[in-house]
Length: 304
Ligand code: PSU
Ligand code: MN
Image (cartoon, rainbow, N blue to C red; front, side):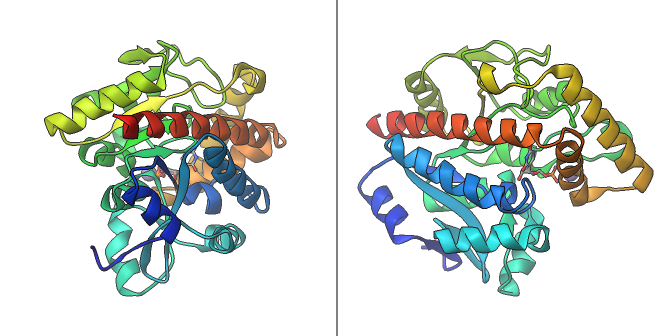
């Protein structure tokens, strides 16, 4: 086994016994939500995965080790440190490991570590993508390249309209990443169920998600699959409220010259402030919803 990888005993045992395991990211904890709601949510998400018959593996970098399966103490540590933890995408891994440092894993890095550990299904809130204005900034998340090359199914609630959703879909198409709508033909836009963009395929059951991903793995087609699961109706936000907040957040980021890896955390925090916490409540609910679907899909995948 990879000398940098440290799989928790529980996750190791589940994998050895062919039990379903669901990976979870840690940037959503450190940079995606404020303390203490971030830690509460991370623990609730783990419990939800257990309640639905799978084993959670929260992924992070701690003391230079690639962790597949964090303890509640490690989750508390990452959540409390918040933005002081390095947000770690693919390019950050070599130096963080050499320095025996900590890192909160983005979707890209969580996929890398999940794949190393043999975990096939990963639940989160939203992925990174092509930012608005990318035609001049070239700000395109490494998450998209990871989906193109690493064999992990990512279950999310679509992408926030801090991104250019149309260009994000074009990029995924070029890279050969299937974009699936769970129970919908329309790409969900994270806080809302509607974006006006179509997904590639609508799938209605965890069994069919698993069968499609199994076929991809069996054929040796590299890369992952993106499942977009709409936020439950009861928790979705009015589109005009959220879009106004996003437009304001982007305008402020441009004024302040925010760029690179700071952009996404800045926009997430700003949108949360502008919507007075309503967006945080929606965010928590959609992650729990994705955790349930991921647990069922991981179970279908191991049943074969
Ligand atoms: N979008 C969200 N919530 C998040 C993120 C994105 O709605 O927490 C985080 C994820 O960890 C994602 C990362 O992988 O931001 C993308 O950052 P960037 O755009 O810098 O690649
Ligand atoms: Mn970026």
